[in-house]
Length: 220
Image (cartoon, rainbow, N blue to C red; front, side):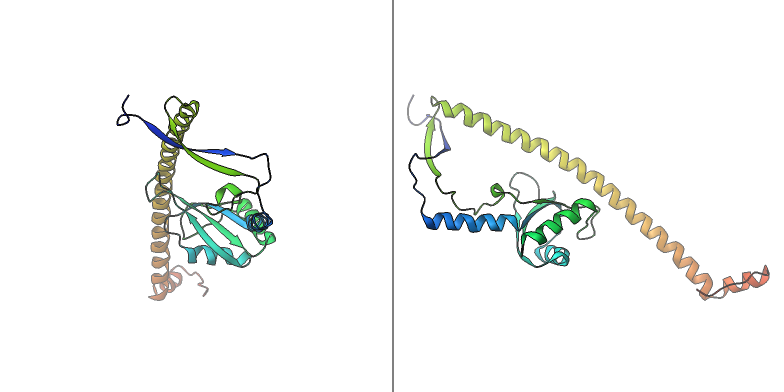
């Protein structure tokens, strides 16, 4: 087979060397990173309309919000729910956020979709430092390499999960749009009723009817 038609795949291979190649600086950086993870909250199910200022205002009641990092979604449309990593000032504040949002429905931007909160994990951070004692090696993999089939299966599995996730999200969005429409119609109907009541009171219709039927009208 010529090199022109030869198929290659780029994969990562992780290895842990038998000798200690980490320095004190790397260990210190990773320890600082772990402290950051402890005071960070993973917020899921966010509306696409939610901005950083909205998140800071909503979670500011639990403490000081130090940083908000939205996690981009490269596999789905822009109108699907978003997620973000929110760093609080201390682990106690992060715990309070998770506890409150887990126990009670928590809304942002007035959407009918309550957000969800979980304790952050190390794998959620794309800027996490290299773990001391761990080294990552990159190489090209040929079709005959045993890792080629493994990488191919992982790639197909990721595509399958992405398609299933997108389908479920679309169903969820459809239900939420229906709920939002119902809420809007209910709000308009209640507003119309209260407007009618206010008009009959202010224009003297209610007092006149009360006098006609010998009823007492009390001012609110």
